[in-house]
Image (cartoon, rainbow, N blue to C red):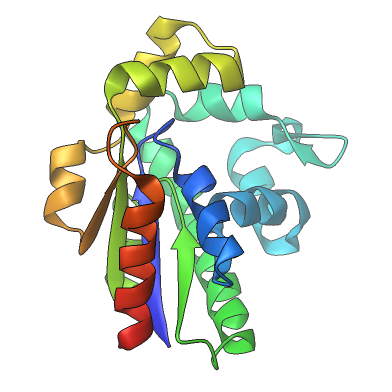
Length: 194
């Protein structure tokens, strides 16, 4: 089985592209969704976060996103602590998930911070989704109801598209100019051949 990572900056459309791969029968592990689920449901993560940041990090058994954002905003030391607690658990969850689908030719692991977390090192191939900044801002405004300043701050926390492209085996241009289906089919057929 070939383990393929798919990533892209916030608002690049990677989830939309994953849905297109799913229609082709590709199994997809949504790392960001699983991380959220595990943060709220995994006993180890919960106890570690509480011991590091106090009981009020959870409200009604759910992580307090506002409190979490306040803790990690502009504090890389605390962000590293949180990542060191959550990422290994997500990685184990991914490996268990892969065991269920080991007969597949390839699988996709969708993650926003594939490079930033270092998890790309455990994958065989990487796909990066690239989208023009103005299109990304428009999508995020519609989806998350954020203002442009906050969106740009979020975009700036992720590594640049140029850096992502350098580390990728495939690039999908989600820009309303290049044909998406053509690009996806090319990657799908290439990975199926391996």
